[in-house]
Image 1 (cartoon, rainbow, N blue to C red):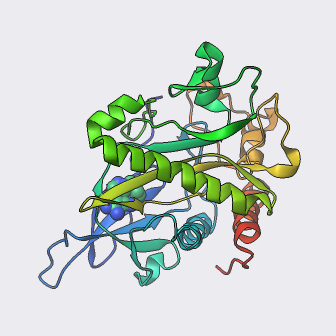
Image 2 (cartoon, rainbow, N blue to C red):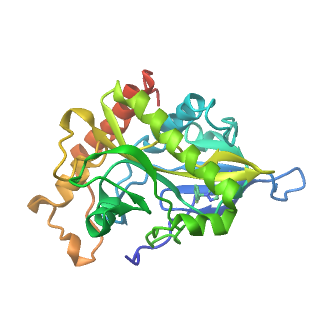
Image 3 (cartoon, rainbow, N blue to C red):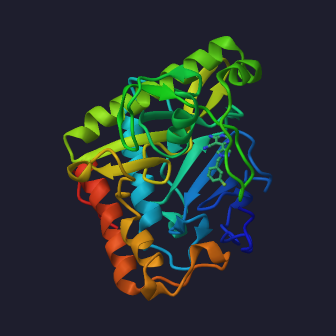
Length: 303
Ligand code: PZK
């Protein structure tokens, strides 16, 4: 869908130059002593913005950026024996404290690395059409929400902001990055999702699928961006898992339910921007992000 919304205007950050903005996060380059942008580091800033039905909503979710940043940092630690990561420091300007990370600037792979442990969304559509997902044959009889025998690597292209990623055949990944790097990115993506689900399983959350980004440092792959957050992954409440229909989203359930209810007065087919969320929907959604963080990490979220 082409966005009809204005680009988010990133906040000015003294000592940093704005580089790029995604839907809900912003990238800055630290300025050196002479005022020039450094070429070896970036500041990754998570906002409180929320997307639903391909719109960035007008209602921010308080602390969402901090919760997701702290969750990513915790996962990087849990995954340290699986893959090195890009984190340099969490010593960041006070305006973005808790929701920004200083990272090493890497040469990013031009691929969204996706792995799926459960079948839904685009993977389900591909399976229904031809019995395969990203070239991997699957058993018959799987339905929306089925657990796959093994996680499958389903890479996609990086689409510009406002467009959807497209499935990318594995052969195209090999052509883009070489066979050695493609194999390593595939194996790491699957290992990250497996480790994520081993940890999340005991804590009432299923991670249906996830998208990670890797960069190269020399010829070693480094995990970049965010990892195993509700923005990069589908989190499902384990106690409600029931294959055969669309699973409720752990974090966006209340938002979707309200936006599609008569009470919102909004029609998602209208192309109109969604209305502001009621305060109780904002508060209950914030509580779900905090709940995901606290359940997974066993820590208390302190804003
Ligand atoms: C990088 N993105 C996606 C994330 C945005 C866009 N360590 C790195 N080195 C070089 N480039 C990137 C990273 C990271 N992470 C990540 N694009 C480039 C992205 C957040 C906000 F606007």
